[in-house]
Amino acid sequence: MANEFSESRDLLYEIIALVNAGQIFSDIHIEQDAPIMYKTPRGWQEISAEPVMLEEMLPVLKAIDEDWEDKVIDGAIDRPFVLTACRLRCNVYRIACGEKVAISIRRLPLHPIPLEKTGLPIYVKSMLEATKGIILVTGPTGSGKTTTIASMLDHLNSVRRSHIITIEEPIEYELQRKQSIISQKEVPTDTASFSTGLREALRQKPDVLMVGEIRDFDTADTVLHAGESGHLVLATMHTNSAVSAITKLLGFFSPEQRTQRTATLANSLVGVIYQNLLPTENGEDFVLASEMIFNNNQQVAPYIADPSKMHLIADFMRRKEDNMSRSLNEVLVQLVAKKAVNQKDAMRTAYNRLELHDMLNSKR
Image 1 (spheres, rainbow, N blue to C red):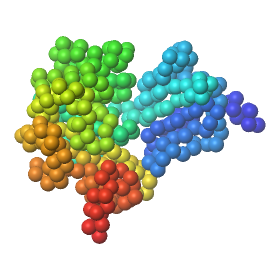
Image 2: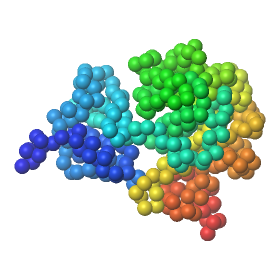
Image 3: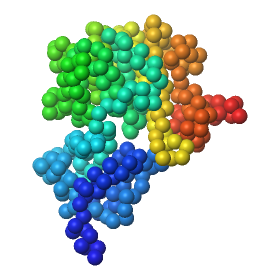
Image 4: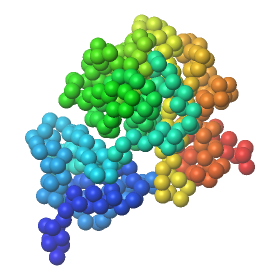
């Protein structure tokens, strides 16, 4: 009986059924000879105890890439896969010394969600009023950075007549032309790398540039040049706070280069959004918690320009002098007070747990 079930199992149908079931989840993990897992707000769970056989994975693997078997020998395959209700980012890779194959699937909405529904404060739109400079969106893997960037670009696309060029690996949201011209480039299909794509894009008359990730010196250097030379640049990074995004970006440069690049960033930074996702108190959905640095009227520039004052940015956020910059802990305290999240999850999310502990206790 078990063999009959295994032979007739339709893995593609199971994925589509899960996507359409209305269950809140972010990722699916399919691994040869193991049960399918999906990531809910409370963590990974089995869909069923039945392990997946390689032959059952083949239709899904071929749907992702007909030549998956040859390509996966050289490294992981990253491909988008579009269903009727959503877009899946699929990563195929080998494990167990090449003996087995696994598929990591990230679930994304089919279209960018409205900026006001991301969970960010509505005044984040004021960042997007800038015509030039750098906006950094940062946070850990799986924190919704791609969704936020797509929503920001879609907002710009709706309100501005501009040329938007994106460099992504892979393209995750397909943006449709509204007010703006949209040119989406995929690494390595349309351009060799983020840095190459960015350099090429500067010669293609962009008004807005989006870089999927700043991960090397060349990309960091070109981002600073583009932000300084009259373009609005949106870029993502992996860091654990808004301030550390600034220090990490400057960290790509040698000590000899850093003085000049620090001055450039101080003058061209529009703002930083750090974000993370928490489970709701009932564990049935996700809540976005964010912290923000707004460089309005160059208020933060003096702290960036002088490395010895960088730590004072945290104090600036706490003082809320501009009514828009805010610390993560302040937001977490508000979420706990509203019973949107529980205290334990808030503490897990905070990077300054001692401060958050004191803030939560002072509210009692």
